[in-house]
Amino acid sequence: MGAIARILNNFCFSDLRIVGSIPKKNDFYLAMHSKEILENAKLFDTLEDALVDLDRVIAFSRRKGKHKPVDLSPMQMASYVHDLPQFKIGLVFGRETYGLTNDEADLCPLRCHFSANPAFPSINLAQAVALACYEIRSLPQRVDEDMGRKMTDAVSKEELRKIHGYLYGVLQDINYFSERETTNWENFLRKVLVRMNPNKEMVYRLRQMFNRIHVLVTGKGKSYD
Image 1 (cartoon, rainbow, N blue to C red):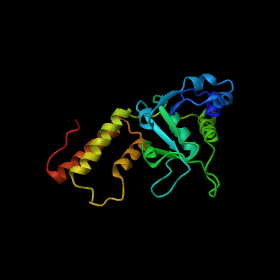
Image 2 (image 1 turned 30 degrees about the vertical axis):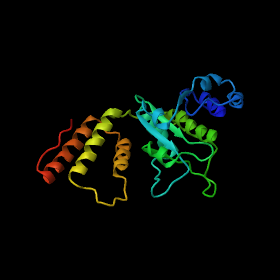
Image 3 (image 1 turned 180 degrees about the vertical axis):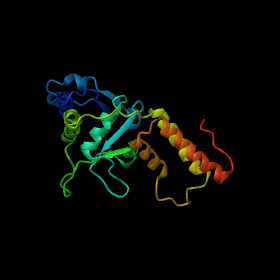
Image 4 (image 1 turned 120 degrees about the horizontal axis):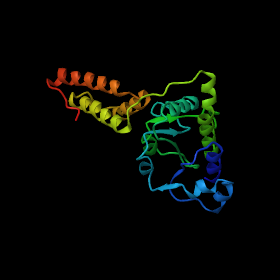
């Protein structure tokens, strides 16, 4: 954690959140010229508590597979962050020992993965943070070379939650789900929405489309409120 504090300082980050407790003496030694970041770290009992006020969340994990899809490359992750400067975005890293549990990873709709040696893909925690911070910090220079980028007008976290609940509710009402589902459709919809980052017009069209589906199947509309 001390090395992470120093890395955050290297790349102009300062909001460090720790699920657990403030590290001990050795960590402060490693936080060379960055002890204030460690001293001011926000402490939480659970990851869920640490994410409450964040608008978007990206988890970093070495694990990937059918039920652990990779949503963003490191460069795509950096672009995603820069496209949403109006929002608070959390980058979530697991424990040095065994990373994030499945339940913890499920709290993060998006997953980023560093391509590494398949026989040994686990990257040291502080080094993983360094790689992520470097990608974000270096992107403005790459953007200048590419003639800039346009900021997205995505809706807020609250609106995303609302449209997610509406879409999922429609699917429930029309009995879309089978008795033995192999897909977590609730998580799938959440992932689609955070990848899409819809604006207000897109949210309205999604509501309109799913409401029509609700009418066709049930014979009545579904209130958005």
